[in-house]
Amino acid sequence: MNITPSLGATRDIALFLGGSGLWFIGVGIHSIFLPWVLLSVLRVSPFQFGIAQMCLMLPVLLLVIYGGYLADRQPLRRWLARIYLCAGLLALVFAAGGAQGWLSYPMVLMYSLLFGALSAFCAPAREAWLNLLGQHQLQKWVTLNIGIEFGIQIVGYALGGRAPELGIGWMFVLLALLFVTASLSVSRISTSTPTKPRSAVLGETRAAWRYSTHHPVVFPVLLINGLIGVFFLGSYFVVMPLHVSQLAGGDASLLATANTVFMIGLIASVVTLVVTGGLRHKPRALLASCLLAALLLAALPFVFNRGLLLSLLFGWGFLGGVALSMGQTLIQEHAPPRNRAQVLALLMLFFMGGNPLGSLLLGTLLEYLDATIVSLGSALAMTAALLLISYTHRFWSLHHAPLNTCA
Image (cartoon, rainbow, N blue to C red):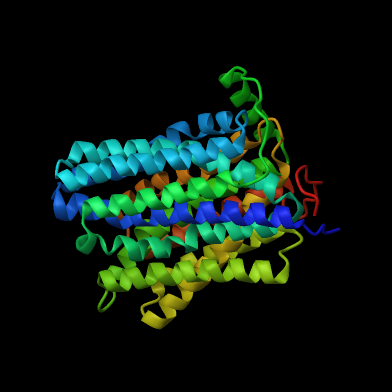
């Protein structure tokens, strides 16, 4: 039975989503602004650029599990507000550096590492708090949060594109304003969690891992998200741009359009799921969306018509939104209260860790094989793995009572 949330609960979730949206506008700005600083202002080499991009993601992979451990033991309102505030203060420090003209390549590396570390602490805390705030309509709020996390970055892309006009100092000021406002937003939420006593981090991490790998829902969802990271994200960042570049007029403008259309497809899936009230059989929806996405991936290198290719990418984004929503909702529903943030951090680790692995694997294969073979091979490998998971874990017909939802 659905329980209508109170006015206070609705206000809390609105403040939470507002803070999350402001954070991800900043993330979108980073994806445009920092490459511009590195390539157009500092004029670093391709190797130095790759190192800088790695510095933004590496702390997340290394620290996200520890970030989950801390989030399980901190009052989440105070913890997340402080993380957002630290990000704002960090941007202010670099705004001063940009205004004084002493921003250098090592300083950009330092900023990337520090912001990456804050992201590692922020992500599990944000997801664990969403579980508490949105527990009466968990699928709806998880889906909306995914739409905000991905869709609102388009605003960040547009703002990041103004960097040549605004300059480095003012861009960091803009980032600081976004993050400080996010901190103020979440600090006004009335619901938090109590401080919990510290315990051995390795013991708690082992407990979270043991729970996740033995749970009939959590473990297959983790595996599927790892596969999404390897084959779908890897293809999105490697195979798709290469294919677009080979089309007539396949310049940066077409690639930007392709990325935007993909994101619009994802947002469309979020709107559809929210308006229709979500999907009842989430494991089946997760598998079906991934299998259909694998079919579109197999077709990708054979599509040379621009309109048809953009339609395919829209469908791929739509299916991706369904898969992400179902996977995150299932983990949210089944994560144990004691180690909830760490189990959610494992989901992020599987998903994000699969991305560089897939990019490396597919990029290497493309050195020796035609893109059609690599794309077909990725789709077939994904399909075979999904069918194996479905068979061994009986995932297609799985029914398991959720722990963390009142809906």
